[in-house]
Image 1 (spheres, rainbow, N blue to C red):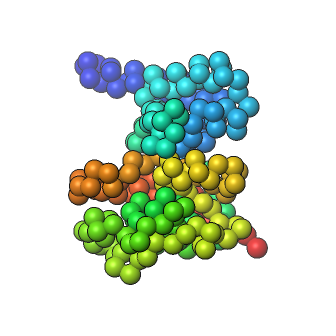
Image 2 (image 1 turned 60 degrees about the horizontal axis):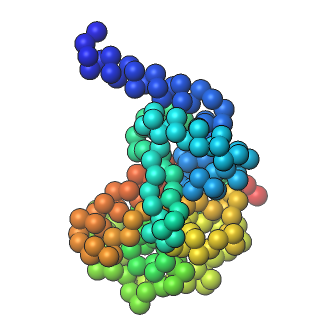
Length: 230
């Protein structure tokens, strides 16, 4: 066995060991479709702070999770699964919803791209909205969409209050929107994706990174969302 093969085996063994404890597996299950702060995870799973910290440390050492500082409340961080770390090991938990609503603050970039991508992939309808809509969709978002075979030419920002229906699955693709919504929308009808805002950078590269992040998440979420049973 050569050195690289041994390193690969050690890394894989570390992942399997990390997932071999029920609480840690529950944490990874929770993060499979969306991000969450440590406090949100602890509250959802009923884990005391010291035990949660222990489990998060092991998941981090196994290369399964990472932290990203919130763009809203800078004192807060969000846990994310490392892309590709599971490589199909875990089935995505199923969600049932008549529609998906992607939400960001201005509904000018991330949420618009998410809804456009979803229309090409998901089995239920999707729309987008903002908590404080801009006047128009950002020109870089329009350009990135066009580059990937999508169209935002007729898209217009809309306010969440004008769009939301009671049974919608809400996906906040923005830290500020997630934090502004607080507990008003929660439980199984809400997911959060902590995706950096490309607008401050204002470059095509920043928007391309946002698009790639969103596309990977939609690939994981779309198979797990089925039409709500009547």
